[in-house]
Image (cartoon, rainbow, N blue to C red; front, side, top):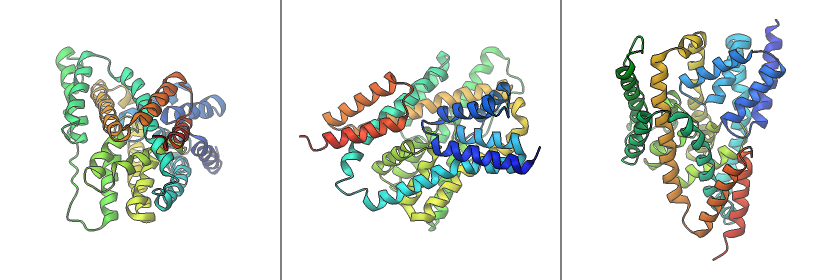
Length: 374
């Protein structure tokens, strides 16, 4: 097996997927399965499923980590870097272009009508993403109860890290007390991340914020926006409108939704802010995959970690719902935005295979048509 040819094949495949990969993590993984298993036969179905399981056991964006895992399986640590970089690169470049355009023209009247319609459409997309996650994660009454508690606590601005790890530990304890079947019961102590307010270096501050988010973020990429709301909006670093616009750009562009961070970093500190933020948010994924890859089977079969993850997942859904409610209050302010939101929700749930980019485009067009009506 020629390693150089493997690296070239990985680069071609993941550059392609990074360019055409609209629709979010589930769509990305489906495309990877078709290419890697059905067509190229680099992995068997079971091996591919094992890698999906591994991505759910570590923090970070699932589809990006799948690309990194596949690269590692195909060509070792060089493949890990090549596959991950090539999958991320197109989204970062495209998002960077949008970030520049937004900074230059985003406040002009001609653009405002489109943004006006995009905001409620994004709410529909997030609801559409949260609904199947909720059905999958709320498996038992204790999980539903913990999810409700997390949702309630989120409105009191309790730190998301505390809520997610707390939910995981609570479910772990409940499952242990109920069936006593968990082997090697371990209390997992989350890392304590502290942000120094004394730092005057904006890029260093951005790097630390996004590094800690990338290092502890479980669940769907949409949970990212709950963290960003707390870390950036609540601290006055960006406005909620800029956050919602970043969500829109992340949906409208191909590749991982985490590329929204490129957009945000650019708004805060220009090109250097975009580069630092992007590096920080994705760096943990490369490290976690490199460390966990050799232990995929052991992690996947761990009853202890599985119970912990159930709690984390239900907390993730609750946080998605929380940020969706907050965004909805800010974005759906009159009958026109209400109408756009309702139409978008109907499209998301009625046409389940529709690409989310079309929902964003539709919202933008409706916003433009309705903006000037009284």
